[in-house]
Image 1: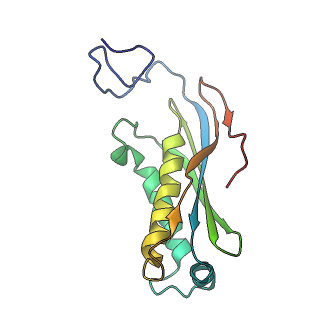
Image 2: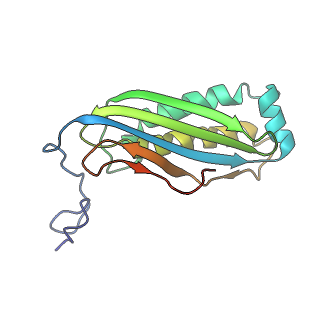
Length: 163
């Protein structure tokens, strides 16, 4: 018999997609972030547009948006959601770290945390893919939820310092 505290298990203890039909549709937002750490010359190449495969941040931005839209195809128990907005932003420390942040919004019965986390992950992996000829030992992470609003569980905001 399944532990009733775990909503992704049925009464036989097997995985299930949670039934959200009884929940109200509300406005929901999630913000996630990750960091790609690299050598200064790799970051300089990204910033100056000198990466042979093209505009790294433009491609990573589109990859993040596309990934958010397809999260339910990547994560087995995620609900497919009608996303109302996706914004991917980049910043850097001018030395060796590229910061990626995604904000995802919907009006629905379940949250968009996984979509925001998927967006930053895909964007970071795209940066790696486009720059691996320059540097293979780039590091990705930490990847984490920064904030979420809406839903019955209420709002959440990470209290520790951001990356």
